[in-house]
Length: 246
Ligand SMILES: [Zn+2]
Image 1 (cartoon, rainbow, N blue to C red):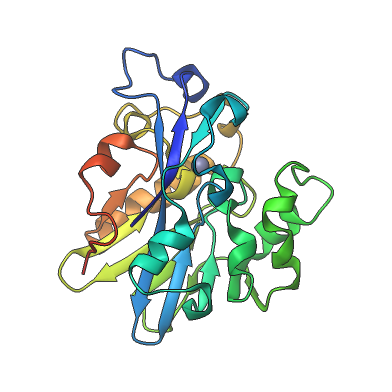
Image 2: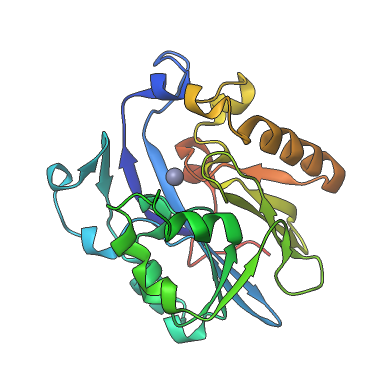
């Protein structure tokens, strides 16, 4: 798990939670590197490395202030990994806090949900975010519609969980010692959304409710834990690179 920045945010009401209900309204932004015998997967690319060293007031997008202390590229270099070593790139979805450095990894094979790829390069794309991932249009790409078993052995699976965006996906990883883990992407932002059963109003009529049910069932079936990356309560106590989970 790699620290890919922080979102400074103070409107939990947008997630149907009050300030009193949310322990911390700010959000951590992690990226995930999965090292498998058959290759390396980078899941999400976080906030742009260009933010490193820049003041918060320069980078406020829709009420989300973006700060970053260490680049993704540098943190990968710290553990001996360059972009050329990354076999596969996958993103949970195409919002700015997940695709900030996508262009840097366009030399990898992009594992793309068809619905998200269509959204990213279609007429409904958020024009402000397209430059962050434009290079993926020319990446070697594997397009699929639904769950995708990354290495073909059931240990690393992209889980189709649409709603937040048309082709949102979570990531399941079966680790030898830690056990099963599901990285939520933005299926949840705050841990309190899950415990208090809340979601943004605009997602109630999307596939988010059924995607959440699907993942809750999947967690039970696999006896897996859920990692909500945007939850600072989770991220604060998590093992971060150069440490790792095995
Ligand atoms: Zn996000």
